[in-house]
Image (cartoon, rainbow, N blue to C red):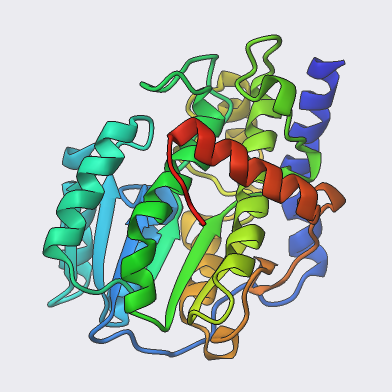
Length: 314
């Protein structure tokens, strides 16, 4: 049953872009807003959607800090942005979201050296990797995609509030529709399906964004989640099947630049200045599955996340 559910999810995610391209309008961020004097932090910015998001925001004049696990690849990406944009303010810092020690060290240095943060884009993620655990013993999908970003946001939230108006953009996925938070086995120790583990982590992203938005109401910091679309990137590197299928169906998939548009939109669009707790796709409001709208599940996940990370977040 788990394998069948994972296969169904895969089919939906793959063929959704065909429906989008045939029927959906827009999908491109049309805002011309500038970000001169603003600081942006993007996780996983060395490749794919993250790199394209960094490129766009650097074009708008922002100081873009690219948080990457692989610093060498990060510097290569930063160099390519500097070549493309004269005077681009981009820098690379090491961050491994699979290690809370790395996250805390990153935040400590960041808070010491960076005095304003106007946009945080939680973009990094893993997809359909074989069963493995983070340094702290969390299943990799929930550990990196949710808990790693949860801790990073917790550590930087004070700076974001002091820099308000500020925005947090959480990159989720259409796959959240097929996820369930398995509180009885959050780390998939009883059974493991890489597709369903990914879906669970993407649902966690949506729930986190909605709950955090409520808690930050009135602070000047907005939080929204996005579905970038099905993008032809190296996110499928852990799955041979997904890599082959993405190659065969490349014509129907978004390019990384197209996939970055909704993240950019949520980071800069003037009309979203006071919009928080929403979900977007193709630069428009998007459907959220019933399990992604459950306040009870969101609050319980929040409490469990704090407990797992050993933090208290009022």
